[in-house]
Length: 195
Image (cartoon, rainbow, N blue to C red; front, side):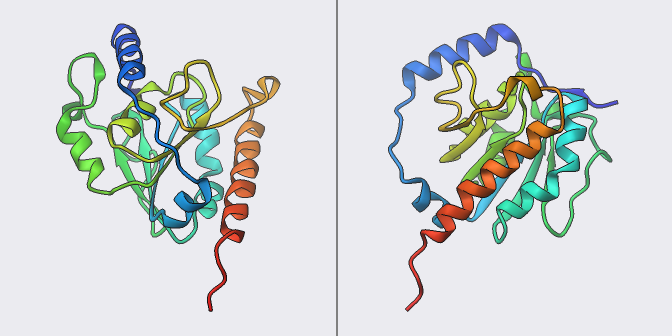
């Protein structure tokens, strides 16, 4: 049985507060960041039902970032077999030894992820999601996309609004996919024409 990785609530509160004090926002051009990006990390939800919904639409999300190196993070312990690497993406799963006290990721695990030099992260967790976004900010992912919620900045620097009445359905992920397709296709169109 998959066990979600949940950072201790006290640690989460302290890290959020401390992060806001230390964080220095960086101005960037979305189109430029997308154009330069080569590696993408998709962070799956830690709720098992939402995980199943997001997994059903994973190929749609992967298609949005076509031509980039793709990885999928499973924020669960004992998650082997729930999602396997394919030609289109690699799977990163968390092991017990990757976590320290309060379920925070160890420096060694963060360094392992940093080697991929992710340019974009997409967090599909619509609930707690702190493990995913904390990991992405520690890995210094420049473009961090997540759903809009209280205290989401600086954890996400691109926030997508979701309709609360669809919160428990697959439609929410379909809507996120459509929004991202639109955002990324517009930034692709903005690329200069080859001479």
